[in-house]
Amino acid sequence: MAKLFRTFALVLAALFALSLIVGCGGGEDDPEVAEATFNGATPASGTEIPANSDIVLNFSGTPENLAVSTGTLEGTTIKGPFTGTSLSITVTWDNGPEGAAGSETLTYTLTAPDTDAPTISSSTVSDGDEDVDPEPLNTDGIEVKFSETVTGNIALQTEAGENVGWDGKVDGDTATLTPLAGKEIGNETTYVVAGKVSDAAGNELEVSITFTTKGKE
Image 1 (cartoon, rainbow, N blue to C red):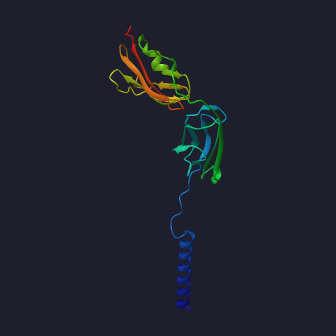
Image 2: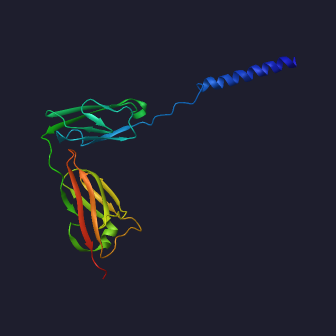
Image 3: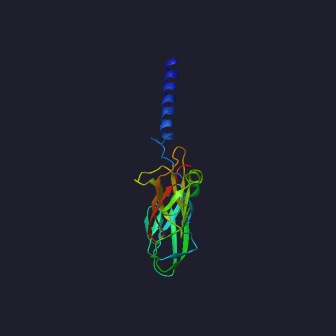
């Protein structure tokens, strides 16, 4: 009888181990793919754009197997130029909200190609400024506004080209330089706001604004 119980226990143990293997699929679970939600495009759908514009797709998360019906896709950018007077682009990706496939349609009215580079509309400091008080800049930073929406980079540098370490950001038609603790600018020193921006058509502008701070009072 004892031998029978031992045999029965061994059979149960073997069945339990087998159930664990089958339940786990014989290996590790496939990793979950984070969903990607479409947050619009730049330029925005429904607007007029030059025929040689690029269109940047904005997502929260990384879209899987992203595809577009028109244009050439580079990363999350649809490259122009486009033809005709109107444009419709269907955007699809696999990992949309709640795990479903995602799909969005973008529409634009096309205008003549844009060959004009963006320009600086206004700036906290202007090229060639002298006797600039550094204190307000160390508090509020520097803002540069452009004639149109741009992308790119901007930095505050010394006259020798060394990065001062301020936080540079380009968003929409505005570039900002935010001062950081321990990176304050000093008196009687020449600085350069330097960078490069481009509009949706790829027209570039080299940013170079040189200014000199005033002496200590």
